[in-house]
Amino acid sequence: LKSIVLRSNRVGECVGALFVKKEKFGEFEAPKSLKGLVCYYSNPKSPASVKTSEIWRIGDITLSDEVCGTALEYDVDSFFQVNIEIFEKAIEDIRTKLNPKTKKVIDFYGGVGSIGVLVADGRALEIVDIDKDNAQMAKQNLAKLKLDNAEVVCLPGEDSLDSIVTDSTLIVDPPRAGLHKRVVQQIAEVKPKQVIYLSCNPVTQARDVKILVEAGYKISFAKGYNF
Image 1 (cartoon, rainbow, N blue to C red):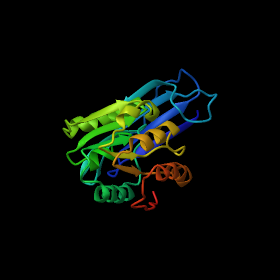
Image 2 (spheres, one colour; image 1 turned 90 degrees about the vertical axis):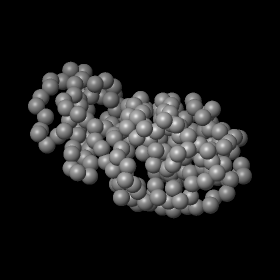
Image 3 (tube, rainbow, N blue to C red; image 1 turned 45 degrees about the horizontal axis):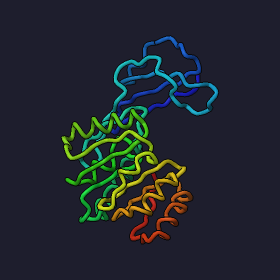
């Protein structure tokens, strides 16, 4: 055994992902309290609980939560904020500060699309994420919400530089390592009308923002959220 991840939504449904160190692991009856359970082989050479391959799954490992009045789907592996009340505060601030003149919203490191779909408000939307499971869940959310003027790109941010265009609001929510240097360079060169940077590491955020300020951007709003 390596680890188990459990996730629940606001109504108390729970799903799980079991990570094990062997490529074969016998299926067993999942607890009735779980809506679904998936078992992954995770390479024992890595201390992290990353999925190398799927061994088996029981039931449905997807959940749904309402954020700012919109139902969004995600699964046990998805990037999705767990503190929804605080996330909603961040979304409301983004909505308030969004440049009304931009025609497109680009959601980099977009996960299941939980920021982009909530703030695009009729604009064209492009969600970029490296993880194929996140991208698939984002496509499902776009389909369920009938957002026809939207697309999902499953690529690393640094390989999707052409998506960054001038007449746009670019939203970035990168991992703790911050933005890839090629992404920062592209932003500085192309200069989208607006950049919204949600960060879980203020140190790397400060590093990236320093370059953007030197390229001519001005900080118009900053706020901390205790997720």
